Length: 178
Image (cartoon, rainbow, N blue to C red):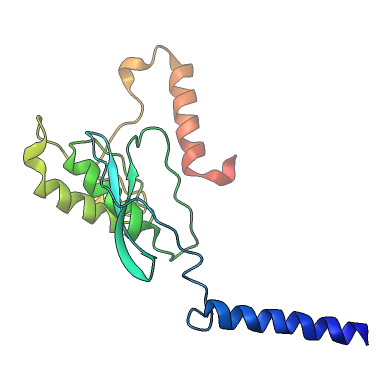
């Protein structure tokens, strides 16, 4: 009997909250879960600025994720297909090229990021003091690759230096040997 009374009381409290706070209009509780975010663009000579959109106060706002010191560290996490490249990496590449950075890009799904970097480099080539060069090293398709010698002969004093350097490179290329 007492248990039934408490269930009736709890359901009455819950229904009064629904009616009082009009939660039926916001069934997914997006209004309570939103908060004001950064809306000002903070730019300096090194900054990377990512545009955002968010809801707050029943209104869509435009904002910024300001990475004012990209040298400190940036980690981008997400499941495959979640939009990491589209939302973050592409903007990092484009803005770094616009600021005349030298880039080393590991393009796992060659040539997605390489095409973006190359086209943006051509567009902003005039901003570099020294004309930049674009090189691609592709181990899967050597026909689409530039050639390089990672073993600098001028740094090799004896045969053990050459052995250690080549051994390290081969272990990095074939992880099953480790």
